[in-house]
Length: 432
Picture 1 (spheres, helix red, strand yellow):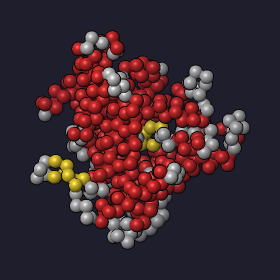
Picture 2 (tube, one colour; picture 1 turned 90 degrees about the vertical axis):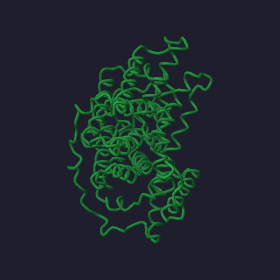
Picture 3 (cartoon, one colour; picture 1 turned 180 degrees about the vertical axis):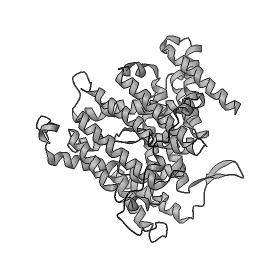
Picture 4 (tube, one colour; picture 1 turned 60 degrees about the vertical axis):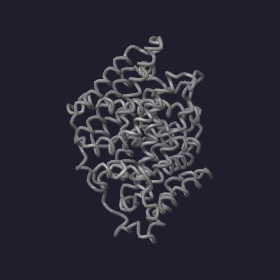
């Protein structure tokens, strides 16, 4: 291990790397509870979804560890899970087509990574739209959490969202879980989210909400119901283009931001602020997205929670390998993950979604052509419950404002082409 991961060269040792890997696992272990529950809302079998999520996380994180020797862990992006499950699948899009969109986004990411056009993509997509897309998806995720908790419901009689029955036991349990998250996070307790989920699940036992499984250890459920359900031709229809962008854009820029941000924390960047070998991280991340799509697993991306392991001293791929091994252990304790009620997982969604709003501070609020498209993206994502609508409208608005304000040359010509394609997307909606 010392030779392969170059531990001495990176001023670390096995003990430090193991502790760091377990720290990263603790901070992102909530995905074992949250992601399968979200996928189940879209109609996927929860047991199979759990097996896929754990297996894909293990394989891709191990690949990152062994190929790049960086302490970066991967997992399904929460925003992509929401789009995949609650917008596409719940909106009536076949699983094969939804998975096909994931695979296509991965193939595009692979082309960008292997052909070395990363800087070109960074130049094309407006910064404000990139930021707003993440913030809009964050509110989208929070809304899902409030709904799972029973706090917010759809009032059919008034055609609006309103408070649910706040006297329900599951609402009380969700509120307890949310307060626990706020307590742990304010005290900077590592793994606070998963710890709050565990405690809330236990509190739900005497309340009659949490159902105790008949066994703790079991053979993982088969991934066959979700494997190779892909229709690439069906995914290429113009009405799915906004979703393709909604998957690709956050994945690309999240990976870029995460590896540079975590790299800076670990002292990996050179004097010019670049991460040596960053292309290897992109190779793994992009291949992971395409590979995961073959198993109906939403966009696999590099997790910002990797910073927890780096802060704990992790400096090499051994940290990520330990994280992968820790997730592998959970593979055989699936009944414990499946017993977690939605009221215990919902507070995590609310909290995670709200934290995604902090990126909005980076938008230039002195420039109308920058901040207005950003808010269009957020508003339409929430009000139409569809992130594809949000990003499509934002790109059209951005291109139009630059055009009419005489600032055409601030935007790459290809963005105007994309805006026209987004207009075609809305035309197909009218046709339906």
